[in-house]
Amino acid sequence: MTVQPAPGGRAVIPGPFEYHRPNSLPEAVALLADLGEDARPLGGGHSLIPMMKLRLAAPQHLIDLAGIGDLKGIRSDGGDVVIGAMTTQHEIVGSDLLAAQLPILRETALLIADPQVRYVGTLGGNVANGDPGNDLPAVMLCLDATYHVVGKGGERRIPARQFYRGAYFTALEPGEILTAVRIPVPPSGHGAAYEKLKRKIGDYATAAAAVVLTLRGGNVATCSIGLTNVAETPLWAETAASLLVGSSLDPATVKRAVAAAEAITSPAADTRGPIEYRTKMAGVMLARGLARAHQRARNA
Ligand SMILES: Cc1cc2nc3c(=O)[nH]c(=O)nc-3n(C[C@H](O)[C@H](O)[C@H](O)COP(=O)(O)OP(=O)(O)OC[C@H]3O[C@@H](n4cnc5c(N)ncnc54)[C@H](O)[C@@H]3O)c2cc1C
Image (tube, rainbow, N blue to C red; front, side, top):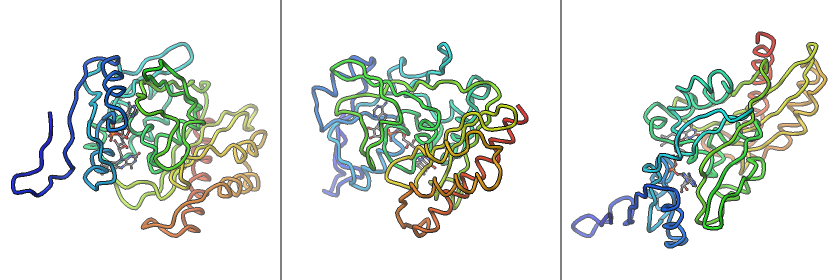
């Protein structure tokens, strides 16, 4: 289908493009390979279509992945959970499996936008987009997820921690489709939290922090931290997390970890606040996330 300019010569928003709806993954991969860099996969369209309306993206062809059943669903696979790229954010919120094994995903998805966006917006679109404001990528860094991608050269598996290269710049090659996200389930008894500061419902994060930790004998045995929207990419705060291992999360150690996390941020000054404020808010979100994850681990 070609979307045409409106009668009278005024361009509709977005500009003209051709719409394709393949029914299988091989068909989608072939279309992307044939159409080249003028083609883009379409997930829920809740980031791409606004970009097209603003003329910040102008693909000539949209390859809608909605007709490919294989890209949907949430399942256990050994010690991992595998989530299809076209699984919606709403389905993440409603999944009993995720609520039991990876509750941080439900908590995070509930903080994305509003129900209307979540009904349509997909996991794959959220993590493949490359927008540092997206909430799920930092959680994937925190959980050490792996992205399954397929292109005309076959399948690749990319650790989330190696996926984000810059704003809207990821390890995806042109023509590749993210098919699924594989997440190792943290041990039972882990505590996790996603703390997000936003100006209002539906807003992207001023700053946010994802925390997953385990305890042994009252002290932190393992810890992982991800940060959202305080740099050009989501951040995995490895040094901050390692400072906490072995500690009882006492205030002095938490303060050192917060400082280490703030030190790796480089937020832009924008309508959400100046650089100093957003840096500090990353630290505040981390301290809150640690406290909440700690409490949950103790109560598990
Ligand atoms: C009002 C509003 C508020 C929002 N607030 C938030 C928020 O607070 N937090 C947040 O995280 N997000 C927010 N979003 C974004 C929302 O979560 C989007 O759904 C998400 O960013 C993109 O998912 P999508 O399925 O809509 O992808 P699309 O918009 O279809 O695609 C986004 C990009 O990913 C690519 N892509 C999509 N799927 C694949 C795939 N399977 N393989 C390869 N490439 C793919 C597309 O080509 C495109 O470049 C908001 C959106 C709106 C409209």
